Image 1 (cartoon, helix red, strand yellow):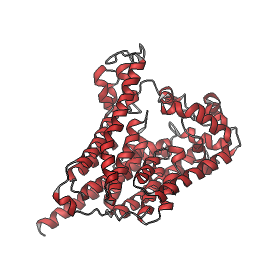
Image 2 (spheres, one colour):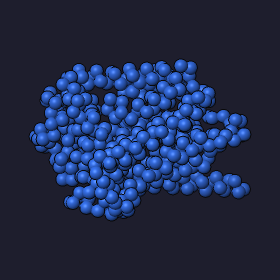
Image 3 (spheres, helix red, strand yellow):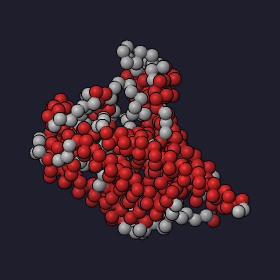
Image 4 (cartoon, helix red, strand yellow):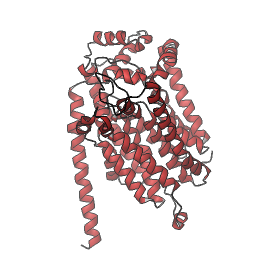
Length: 440
């Protein structure tokens, strides 16, 4: 056996061992706990679905005391750490997600949902393998390295694993030259979790109009279905009283423990660094007036948006079909940085954008950038929050309580740098393995 054969064997053996370890970790740390107890956000999803099944007034969704009382009437235990649980900030169509499971007992419904999540992980692995021509073991490792996203997604009953799988399906349909179906897949979750709009925006910037229109049809279909089932009143209530409060960050601040690092957002970090509170934040780095802190926060977010503009201009003006991949990647990362709060479960949404970025930069000769992005993605999946949370409320050291935020920020700027880097002579000779884009 020559040296090449030996290194290939060792590589396969290491990947096999890592995959086995991650699968064991998945079932021991993620699947088993979710099968045995209900925690955190799942009571919100199942309660709203049961209310729809029973014909309850959907306007109660946004009346937090009434919603919690309904939860108690259904015999659903409210977790002690989340005693102020409420349906807000979820949009009304969210209540339709678990409607097929509404007749089950809550724990049974969660178990069915977890089993579905495991099936979706298999489907996502197969889709990644087909989209990027990866070996299945590599695709499986990529999915399982999202770590915390799988754990909290299953334990809390969030639909992000489903959303990410459907986004992968949409991109696969696009490569198979089915743009309308691709857009429809990308659009159906827009009224529920917004984020797929970033992928549709990427297609729009590259004039893939049929994908964009398909997304609009999918989103409109879900909205019309929601209005037909729930009525217009709850949607009007959401648009007028909930949506802006959510996007401004005030709703998340009230729903979570004050100044918690859990959301890993600039909103929460700036609150801890610059807003004095005698009980919950007695040692900020600087005690600023709220309007000054708000201005600093807004300025930071504007800078983040402006930082992407040169890369977006270069990508959109380019003629290469492969430019779509980094466009989607950058646009998909940006809202996670701008959002007032996002849990670890939301980072399952990185499957498609990170895979696109890694594959694109590898094919374009920017291997270092691709490796950095992949390593950051894996680190995000296994951050030891039990240690980093110890820095909360320690003045300037508070920034160490936000590792996920800074890792994502690093990934964002690595992407921008890779796009703007000076072109190498041999880059023009390289061809991306991504199939040519369908004509608009």
